[in-house]
Length: 623
Figure 1 (cartoon, helix red, strand yellow):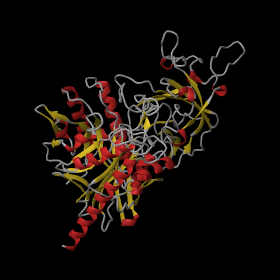
Figure 2 (cartoon, one colour; figure 1 turned 180 degrees about the horizontal axis):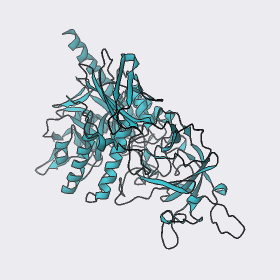
Figure 3 (cartoon, rainbow, N blue to C red; figure 1 turned 60 degrees about the vertical axis):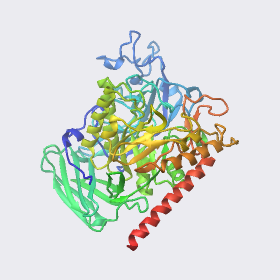
């Protein structure tokens, strides 16, 4: 059985006072905390030559002892008619935060480079020794953050949260927050230069200013260890506390009220028993209120209690076999011309599309998605796969690239470790086998397990064929030995022959582990009619789904799939005029949510799968 293991806490949590730079991430649970939103209109300056960051010798202004007022982060105005200042945020254009710049202004549709954002705001009132923090949900890809002309720090990575302490740095009125966002693709980046999704730039998730007591609950985790006994364990991290600080953990609906004291690193550990708890599942997504208190600080949240494990070729949720009726999803909502998902409402619509498909599982590809969708999945009973963008051809030999990937893994798990909906942490997608890659991903797997042993670890691998039998598909990869479930992508019928090939292929998967097909699919332009042998038609896509699902049902240990993909999404790799037009057309829905024929095929398959499970459960109950 999988159980929570409280190991390497100081390494995991960074148990010191909050660092000044977001490059040293320490989990900070902020979603439910009251905060001053800094969303809305921000002034912007497009800076493709980074004139506001470097002088003409290419020397960074923010590394100078006395940065000139010509640096954009100084947000300066000419002090007299003879002072040369070649920018003016007040007279510049605006963008909405959160949001990507590509879909807000037509001239920025293909833009990759730097844009400076500026927001003016007044500081909230504070009392005594209260502290303040600026929190960013995400900005793609590198963000350099300045407050009132002084650099707070920087963050690298486009899909995970970061924050800076601003205690003592705010003015009562007229604070200038300037953020340089740079989405240029980098060979050593994570992801690297080549992807199959749109490289949306900008401050894509919410910006908030939080006020906390001097000593406050920064982070916590609570986990069901054993679904039979109800054994719980967890911890709380109290920022600003040393040893001996009392922390109280309450789950009032379960009559749990326990107290613990912090150690020298500010960590208090808990254990309890949830007697009579209703376990979280897609059929019954029961959530329980959790309250963590210390001194005059209180952190409120909701958690679901469940276990997930792999046992032989079975996947067990709360000790019972589960079939993952899944679909893959990009964090894109193109209805009304939008790009990145920015609101709870858009995330809810995406999950409703999945539920309309009779899905109980969503693969959040290929990066951590907005916290909105993860928390909605908790409430709606949708299981999730969450992934970091170690995608295709990462620079496996670069230690800097590895540290970047590890940081994004830590930030993903740090944010979402209490979300019952997430059952799988994914480390990579379609990565070519090599010794360097194996070392890289082995380190990531070890790190993931040290952070959270209560979930499954996987990665989307690839198949190959038996050289002596071109219709015998093989999934054999050193990475599979490290994973809890064997997941792989395959495109028989699209990139690999036509759909009729699926009727002849057999599979060799030599692992005593559950098998999950993380991608399959075919492109189709919604509304394009034709016979089932003509590419790009709805009929061809639907026929591929019929034949592929029949093929997958024959695989030993098959526990689910997440076909590619729920809705069409933007990709610069997809240039075919009149068909693709910058969209990957493998969606079961168009980019505006109109179903294609294959949507109905998969929905019916999942309906039958759900009925079979109900039939089995009734038979077991009658025995």
